[in-house]
Length: 194
Image (tube, rainbow, N blue to C red; front, side):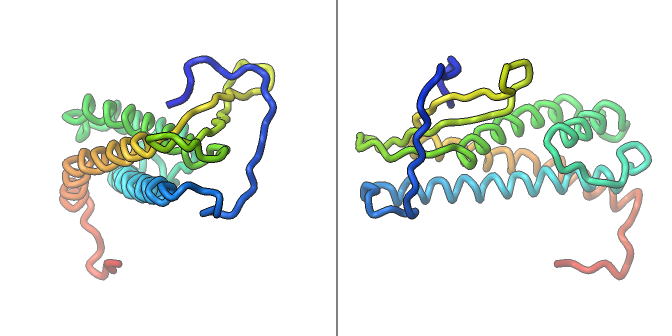
């Protein structure tokens, strides 16, 4: 999504405007809509992924612990540990680790869009907007990886499509986990559905 080479030294310019701005081109609404759908799709994907982790923990709390990790690295460790050590997940090991890789890739793209430092729209066809993407990077003088990106509505729509596809790809695993949990540790009879 970003330029392959890290950006060299450059001046940083912030555009402080109301969103949407009266300076936006008329096609900007399509761009904003695409970002909204991408965020929504990413949230649904994260919900499925998080619920799968919670269910694994409910089934195997002795092996996975009782506290849901909140940072990405710890979530990855928990997911890998589950698929590499729990016998009931052995049949899903390959697909589970592949899903993890795809989820991480889409999450990185989503984070770049959501946390990008936005410039003004380029009045091009199709409409584009420049962004500066800043990520943490070990073994650099300042601990940062700074890159420029040109973002299109098509790119954002593609990230949303990938998130939606992953959401659907998680369904068979989630269904298996729900059945396995109910068979091994049935929920209490007074459980409340929200």
